[in-house]
Image (cartoon, rainbow, N blue to C red):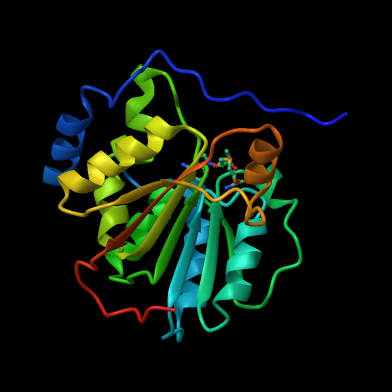
Length: 227
Ligand SMILES: C[S@@+](CC[C@H](N)C(=O)[O-])C[C@H]1O[C@@H](n2cnc3c(N)ncnc32)[C@H](O)[C@@H]1O
């Protein structure tokens, strides 16, 4: 039987009242959480793949099974396309991937910091259906409320966020604006083929899907050509 997924429900009805203060605090103080041993093998593998790679980098954060990573690798054949997810279970369901795709089991925040420390900018950054964390008390777990958000922004590139929770996308836009970056928020066109398994499931369930696009200026490091 086809499984229908529920829309996101939250007691939060507008942009979180603490969001602006959180973003200001995170902007002022770099994220200092020590790196976790669990991320080390993935970061070592990333280093290995980055050695000698002078071309563009595309990041697919929260990639789940890697379906989108495969599609993006085909769309950007000259780039190294890196999919990151913390779940070994999801990553074990990866499709066959082209040679320019790399899947890493790691926390995305650790990968953002690692790339920022190495001054490796991105050509594109996709965040497709990150966990919404709809409880107001969990605002600090949303990408834009997390202390690593300024690192993500510093990576630069053309960013695309997708979510089935309109407020998540709007909040992300408010946080970007606070950092001086104008976002474009739209309903996603309903006729494009799904890029991810969650997108397919949400579409089948009749959810409204939202997307945000922004061009993040790279804050340093070698320029990554657009691709
Ligand atoms: C709603 S799923 C979306 C997966 C995929 N993008 C899709 O649309 O099918 C969210 C994913 O984020 C992963 N995740 C949650 N927090 C994470 C983190 N901090 N670092 C890496 N992955 C994380 C989960 O394991 C899960 O696969």
